[in-house]
Amino acid sequence: MTQTTPAIVPQSAVRRLPRLALILFCVAYVLPGFLGREPWKLADVSAFGVMLEMAAGHSSWWQPQVLGELVDEPGPLPYWLGAAFIRLLPFLSADLAVRIPFGGLLALTLACTWYAVYHLARQRGAQPVAFAFGGEAQPVDYARTLADAALLALVASLGLAQLSHETTPDLARLAASSALLLGAARLAQADDAHPARSLLIWTLAAATLVFSGAPWIALACGAGLLFWIGWPRPGGPEHGAHHRPLIAAAAILASVMLVAAAAGLLQAPALDMPDHWSDWTRWGRLLVWFTWPAWPLALWTLWRWRRQLRQPHVALPLWTTAVSVLNSAVNPDFDRALLLALPALATLAAFALPTLSRSVSALIDWFTLIFFTGCALIVWTVWVAMMTGVPAKPAANVARLAPGFVPEFSLLLFAVAALATLAWIWLVAWRVGAHRQALWKSLVLPAAGATLCWLLLMTLWLPLLDFGRSYGPLSRRVASLVPANSCVLVDGLSSAQIAALQYHGRLTLVRTGQPEPVNARDCRSMVVNPGTQDTLDQRVQLTQWAFKASVSRLTDRKERLLVYQRVGQ
Figure 1: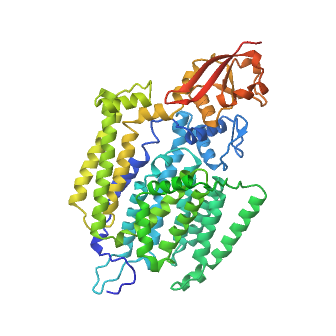
Figure 2: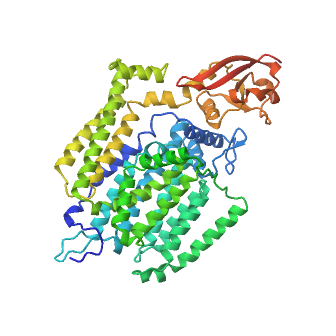
Figure 3: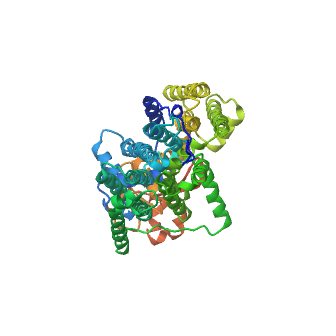
């Protein structure tokens, strides 16, 4: 046996995870959160409002806007997807129609991550040690096993659950970043039978990033990957001849994007570098929990494969992770920017498994078992308290945090939650008694536990979460205070509040201070943000309006809307 890599893997350790089980597992993760819930504040409902405006013909498809005001989020492609499906599926509710393409984007992210690791694991430098008398893992079986493990690591990432189930541009960028890594992984293979197809995947992914509001990520990450692939390196002379044209392609891409940025076609991201220690500590805490459990395994990969850092299976995901983490540090939305690092981190985490000892694997299993079982018990306990009032303390906490919420029993949601819990119990027993040598065994429980908790939240707690995180109750209360079939003036409202009033309240809104598409006298009511009340007289004649009511979100008394009624002409 000649040890050239830290991976010592026998053929018995590369058992294939059953395809049907893997597919059902992905379905159980993807569907909850896309079905049955209302759009949540803030980014989710804001993006949904833009899609509604586009589908209704009230917004330009090249410059997304809400009530004539451009949205802060650049990149129209994700809004095109949602608006197109609203038009194509008029028989579905609009919020369900927009979730279909975004559910597909999440499924695409999982698939791209799997295939990226599959191609990277087949690289010569990623192969396990060849035994003197044979018996080492075969390349294809080894690659499939690590790809399964990467998929499990991605699903297990705590930060993926909520943000990946929203209809926002972040999900389009996530899918594009995983496809970008897949294209680079395919191009890194010297024996790639379809280099043109691989380059097409890479190009489409980069274009998607550009038109989803992340051109600089496409430039830094995409061009950097191509430069690395095309650059000659020791132990891979074939790459210099086969991929040298990719250096020119990367240079052309970088030049075009820089020219476009200079011409104002692409919007540079807003930089918000943390300037206080508290901001850095908040970002550091986010890194720890958001990317758990992938980041400890990724660090272990970098240590154990430190002599192969220039090999594609380490260098490509490492570069993608570095770009995404740096972007998170300078981005006002730490978590949404960090989301792009998860596929690459899961890729790195997969390559730690061939080097883990049994004691470390057992530690991961026990920690996961205790943590996710405890989380599931909390979800069930609070649900029982909501339904029965026992235990009294959790029931009192729910009543205090969500005043006015009336729980209702749903047999369907209860049955799904019960089946998921039974599946978790069976999986724990199966994990203890079977497949002890499979490489992916250490990530089965983390991925299943994350899926279980997410599914329980999206079933048992779904009515409560809709009540607390949706603008639906607030919008319907406002709608009950204004005359039917009358337009409503709005002043100082956010795009999320406007979208909620339009969708949940079924109101026709007109923004103050802008050209009005209808006669202003037809607007018998006005909804105002208290923060703009002091300057309201600069946009409307207050003598024609009388204060009627103050409406606040029941779960957040600080967020209020003021309702006025026209008393003049």
